[in-house]
Image (cartoon, rainbow, N blue to C red; front, side):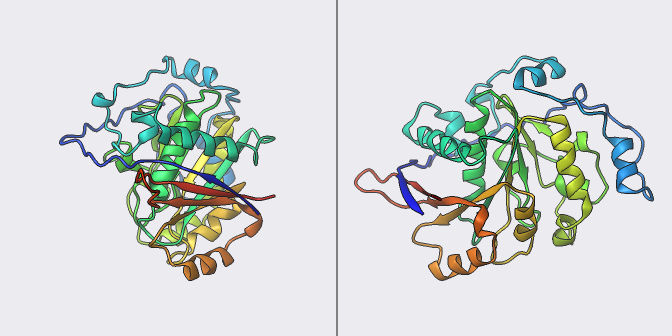
Length: 305
């Protein structure tokens, strides 16, 4: 495995005094809303047929915009509820955002022959920056404008994605897996053109059982049905303390592994990686490593030969 050393990101330290939340109703024209209650005793196949409209075969981002009957528009940062640490949104011309574009290009080589691409973002412990990496990467890919991007919060224990995109009191993954929401109710538009978010929803008491259920497979098939050309990026819970990552890896084309410099124990990293499918490892991303003399943060991705 050769190493490619990429310097990234000065962290934004300023927090706005007031953050506006954006939670808009946006997909009624894209999905045929089913007002009937979710079936309680039907099979998954029958439920899929009842609640999911025929394949739209959305081939590109222009088709998505057409079905939504809107033109893509970038909301001014001062009018957005997006977290200020989303540097690819607030500072798209910065050197930091450029490094995410480089990471985007590196990852594309692994899945260049696939129309539907699924990437899992993993880490060893909480608060290592997984959500930060996943969200900025999703924004960077969406900014290309060639295909929609769906960012899903797979951490049903300590979710963060809804906070980063200013979503409040919305249904999400846990609600769908528990049969308390339909597909069109959990996919939310953002202030970033071509980027859609599936938040975690209500925190459940049985996250491992929900992730392991057949409803997850049904959801992934629904995403593929409505976005035939798409990036699906999943923010995973930590590997060490949860069992869900092993299940999520089965559904992904590959994963990147986030390591926080000077914090994450190397022994824990080795132990965590031993529990994953090494053949699906796209690379390592080092977060918050001071790079002298400019005190930049950087991420380092190890590419497989």
